[in-house]
Length: 85
Image (tube, rainbow, N blue to C red):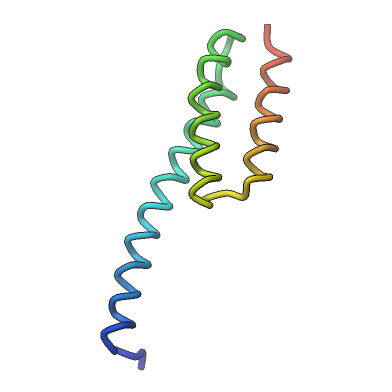
């Protein structure tokens, strides 16, 4: 049986709140990346990239993803944009 002390219950509540918040942030990150990748033209992609870059940087700042992962994502998105016309 799990412990039921006050501090354990408090920690469980905090963990659940954090889990929900991280889930929301992760979904926003995925949507932003998908918007850039699904763009048809270079102009659309660059517009989407500006917002995606902001979301990626905030995700790294909030430790949703590692800062190096953020850098790699931005680099790969820019590389994909460069192939568009």
